[in-house]
Amino acid sequence: GAVVSQHPSWVICKSGTSVKIECRSLDFQATTMFWYRQFPKQSLMLMATSNEGSKATYEQGVEKDKFLINHASLTLSTLTVTSAHPEDSSFYICSARRREQPQHFGDGTRLSIL
Amino acid sequence: GENVEQHPSTLSVQEGDSAVIKCTYSDSASNYFPWYKQELGKRPQLIIDIRSNVGEKKDQRIAVTLNKTAKHFSLHITETQPEDSAVYFCAAIDTGTASKLTFGTGTRLQVTL
Figure 1 (cartoon, chains in turn cyan, brown):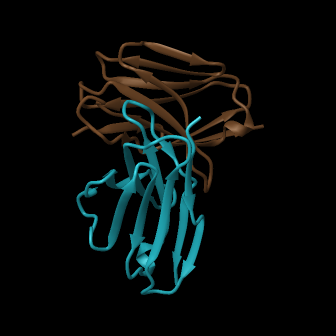
Figure 2 (figure 1 turned 90 degrees about the vertical axis):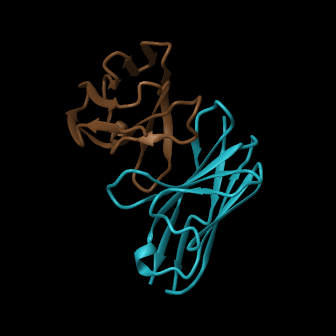
């Protein structure tokens, strides 16, 4: 089956630090990757959609200069949270899919900013 | 855009009973409806999905039904077990024009002994 790997699984860092999260599709080429944020006891909130080789499409209210997304290949997308602050603490999850196929999620990254 | 509503938000059933979670969608063009199960602190996992050309799909204890006319779809879990306890999300998408899933708000299912 389709496997999506996400690293790191847990990050604790000081306020002002930039944090990079990687999302890889291990056994398929992902035409599209998605980045979500999930607060406790809430649904998945889509942050941005990323197609390989093109700029990410951000959802309304998501700051593209704060959440930098790079999708350099069909198997790798990265999310960089720049100058993170405590309010950025959340569970970040990526997902990937091939055209016309279901989305498969990574294990998520729990980000804690002190 | 698409809007998906999900009910109930919490559901508690006794082991062995059935559980039903319902979702409605607004975009009549939506044609793919997956269901995800998310355990605490873990990834959402696809458990079953249905396309608009099918009215019902079953996989062992899990079934999904779709009513295109009424624009609603439901997840049915029979003979529930404690390991079914999790948060379940429905989603909808028009695969012809949209690239992103629209998720429901989730249902926290608790199966008690």
